[in-house]
Image (tube, rainbow, N blue to C red; front, side, top):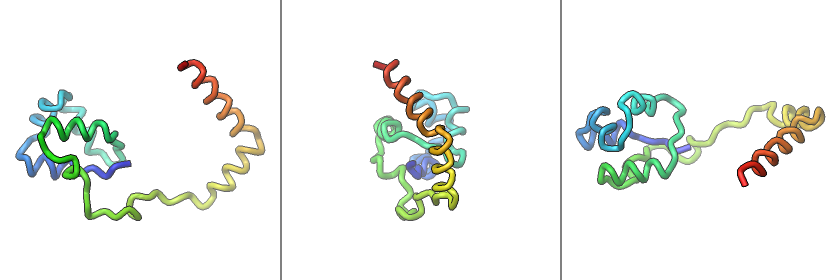
Length: 106
């Protein structure tokens, strides 16, 4: 997940969300969704925005956050959940389902 600082870039470039939406070919309502917490934005999307706005892609990242801040804590019971799912066959079913989906794509 990238910690994107879109609001800061728009502010520094003097752009409203509406103008940004026009430049990148999005609906203004979709731009407001980008500001919601937990939104995961692809690197390819950031590169496209960087090109559209003519700004370095580095400007989109919040440098005040350390790598440690970006890691998600693992739930204390994650291993117990995995073990239970493995014992009851859920893990195998999920792997088999994933294999079927991969075969359909090819």
